[in-house]
Amino acid sequence: MPGFPDNFAWGVATSAYQIEGAVAADGRGESIWDTFCRRPGAIRGGQTADVAADHYHRWPEDIDLLAELGVSVYRFSIAWPRVQPQGRGRANPPGLDFYERLTDALLARQITPMPTLYHWDLPQPLEDAGGWLSRQTAQRFADYAGLVADRLADRIPLWITLNEPFVVTAYAYALGFHAPGHELMLAALPTAHHQLLGHGLAAAALRAAGARVAITNNYAPVWPATDGAADVAAAHACDTLQNRLFTDPLLLGRYPDLSAFGIGDADPGGVVDGDLEIISAPLDALGVNYYNPTRVSALPGSPLPFQLEPIPGYPVTAFGWPVVPAGLTELLTQFRDRYGESLPPVYITENGCSAADEPSADGAVDDQPRIRYLDGHIRAVAQAMTAGVDVRGYLVWTLMDNFEWSEGYHQRFGLVYVDFATQQRTPKASFRWYRELIAAQRG
Ligand code: FCB
Image (cartoon, rainbow, N blue to C red; front, top):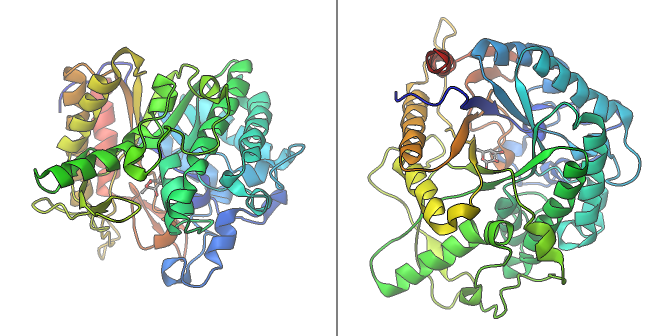
């Protein structure tokens, strides 16, 4: 393994809804995911996150695991419905207290907290008022950010506003796989602008409290299925949606050309004068989530002018996702070329894989495929850094097995195995491997 700089941040990431459970504890309000989990057929096996990994009650044990792992940074998310059960108004003190206890316990172990304010768990009352289709939600998000910052910004250096707004627009509003389950296709595009505006307004609230601000997007190099002009154009259209729509406005202050989608004026809908100035206030860092590349072919006559194609010739994860570490180097160097000086320092805020982890008779979980995945991708980060990309940290998705959205508990991404019947946590072989890697890098 190549050497990384001494101050490189090694970490893991989680999200509130996927691990906390305790959905009715201490005044928490309902989120759109609580509602979605009750929709027949929405979640594989009809599972819910009512208990998840019970982190809300077991967090001290989980922080002990983080300390044992030796990470310098821990990315978690704050559940908006715990802080504002109705999505507006005064804070619910027990909600903020929970994250304050977590923050202070991390700091006591020299682990830097890296909170995400929105990892998909919108308060249900805000969805009832239009959700991210409504411009008002952006202001609500900024109000919520301000409440959290008032309590915690004095102790936390770097904050992430949104997690993967592209997935929210695509899965939650266009295709309906994620909560709240709308199938609006291109009519979902205003949710892109409202989320970015929410980011910009929240960033201002965080900065007013002295915080530094990042946003996390999921990115993938997009490969055309063939060299033919139609497939190359399809790849360009897909790249625009996945990699540019949520990045050009942040870094360049303008939306990309959306003409491939029949939209003439580079406006996904909802843009008001002054919005792009708010959205493009300089970022302190860009969070990059990477899992695999995307490959597409042309789909003439469809509102979405491309379709996804398999990527043959690579190993696949338990989820069926191709394992292509070089795609991460490609993506990072492409971003360096595309954005130049406008690209802020990068953190890999998620990278990891699901595997068919089964404890053996002695209880051990020997997850060699995950070790190979992580090893390859960490090397890919090193290559991008050698090529001049300013990467400041790498965070594995994820600390422990959890509720994987519409897949329920069927995909295990953790470094720690969770027996969901007993909530017993067992570090996997990958946990020990990552611990040794971090220790070796620290020298
Ligand atoms: C990302 C999400 C994260 C998790 C991983 C597997 O898209 O941010 O919550 O589901 O994928």
